[in-house]
Length: 547
Image 1 (cartoon, rainbow, N blue to C red):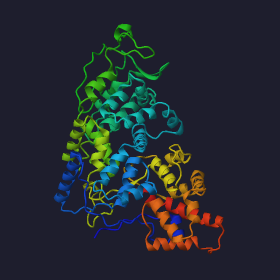
Image 2: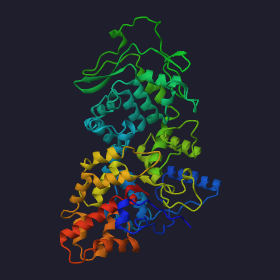
Image 3: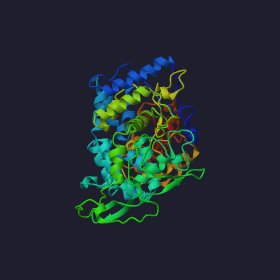
């Protein structure tokens, strides 16, 4: 028998509900797979994952119910829970391929664009403070939105970001990846390695990596050298990254004091040859070293450009580039990477399914680095659509034998709260900055929820404000308070927020709470009690996780 999934209750819930409530229910899953229109990628995934089950002699979880699937796929693709109407429409659909149709509809939506823009903004740039986030709205965010709206090939996007020489207005925001790092070549190198190649090189600054010996100190300083001639420049056309034709020659010392030149090289790549001047020789920054003619309002480009060499000879065709992206998206949708952690794809972290990783990377390349096709292949697979109730006796999450629970990002939580309260969704809702600061990680290696989260959600004035907004006319709380049938209202509450019906114990506990002062209460009294109940369910672990 499968084990019952439980979430730790928040302290307030213990006061409002009896013990053991707010545990997600899983209706019996129909044993049907998406077959019509399935991609070869989904077939590959299920074949390789099933081979892992067989090898370890385990039985995976059953397929998730429609109620579980529609909530999960909306959170993963649209970045929010479904509305009540969207949920009902999906569940009542009797088409055999309705899951695949739902996936395709969401991938074509603006919600998908905004959700993946949020995710990759954080993955590529880090959370940043409110000032940095505000600055990104001018150029960087519109650029990312264009990437996902038009499904632009990831290899071209990576080239634009790292070359940072826009040749059209819609590429102007690509420069922000380097520009925000303020001429700090080491910060750039330490960001580029995990973002585009899936490895961390920070430990190789002072010596070869002490555990993953294939990552050398020369890889760290070689990557730095590709960017150490670059400099931020403000032009009439906007922020730009200039590049000098001279300089950037230095040596790095290891922990034993031995020095080596910072040649243009990187992990699993060839060395880019560049003549080095004699020691102490003076270099002149003359026009002959640059391409001509110079574009108007654009920085001049060296004939020997280190950034050009990097994207042409290191990035292009790098053996880790496609694998790193595939592994990251897999981790985003499946709860952990095929290599885990997803940004440490080195010799100390073996892939759980090496043939699958290689195959998906090859598929990704063959598709022309089609991001949407990759996402579709993963979410159309049986492995993605398993129940999140862990099977008895199966403990290793690397087998992907059940759907791994994931905490919602700040953006997913903010949008989902608004959907649950039946409000118009604002991507820049006032509570979002507060949630970003409290929940900085988009794909945390480990998930920890503590009393601090509870206190934040209990005491934050922006959270209080959104509850009050839900109490206005046409909001969820006002509608619940107006219902003559309290049991029907409780059912509506659970469906709107958790996407499921309450069990008997949950229904009885809520009913007892809302009728605590008797049936002759004023409307304001009903609103107050429903506010408490709605707050308790919204801040429960069940709501704050994708499962």
